[in-house]
Every structure is written in structure tokens, then in C-alpha cells.
Length: 158
Image (cartoon, rainbow, N blue to C red; front, side, top):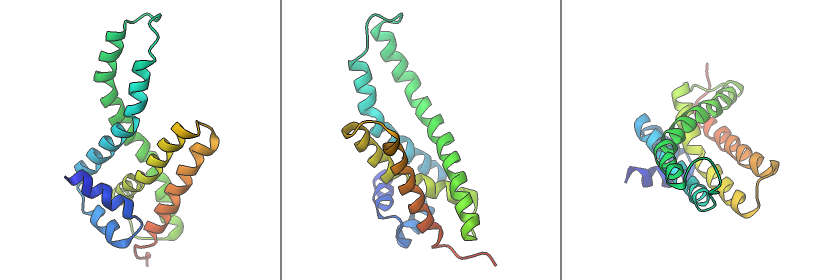
């Protein structure tokens, strides 16, 4: 249930009320939210990978599926935490430019929830348009525009 509440509030960003509601979400629920979101968004790619698996490789299909089931969740968790941490550094730079009172933990959560719309957009563009430079750049621009608007809600440093 917490996932759907967070998802709804993520779609309402950069509204002030949604931002403050999401800042009250625990870090555990934040990580759970992004892992579930990434799992759901990249599940079609995994299914397509299994369907189009070439049998002429060194590993059998059953071993490949087993590796996906075991390794994929751990890979999603690691890549989501590492990727969000790198994107939160960009948010930290925006915080310094706007001279706002925020700590890294708040920026990390804000980055996580602000990623909802860009990730969904990226997935839709990737499957409908294909992958090119523009498909990769548009979600990042949207992410930092959202984060910039969210950061300006907080008070300036004295």
C-alpha cells in the first residue's frame, strides 16, 4: 500500500504537499519503492531476453533463467542505490547553486522519487522509439528540472 501512496505522490511532484509527504517516508520504504519500480519497468526487457535467448551459447536455457532469477534482483538493488547516489550528487550541486538548506539524505530521497516520471518516460521511449542519445538525455533533463523546482521549495541558507 505504501508503494502506491509513494507512486501517487511521485506523480504529483514538484508540488509542495507531495514533496513534504515523500520526505516523511522512511529510507527503507524509499529503497523498496525504487527497487519495485525498477523491477516492474525492466521486467519486459527480462522477459524479452528469455524469449530471444540463443540456444547455441555455452549455458543451457534453464541455467540462464536461474541466473536471471537469482542475480537480477541483486543487480537491480545495487545499480539502483549506486545510480541514485550519483544522480543525487547532481542534486547536491543544484542545492549549492540555489543556496538551500538540505542534507544529502533529503536530496537522495528527492532524487529517488523524482526519478519516477523520467524512468517511465525512458521505458516508453525505449520501446516505442528505440535507443539513441535523445532518448537518454530527455529523462535526465526532466529529472533535474523537477529536482530544481523541488529544491527551491526549501528555505535559503543564511
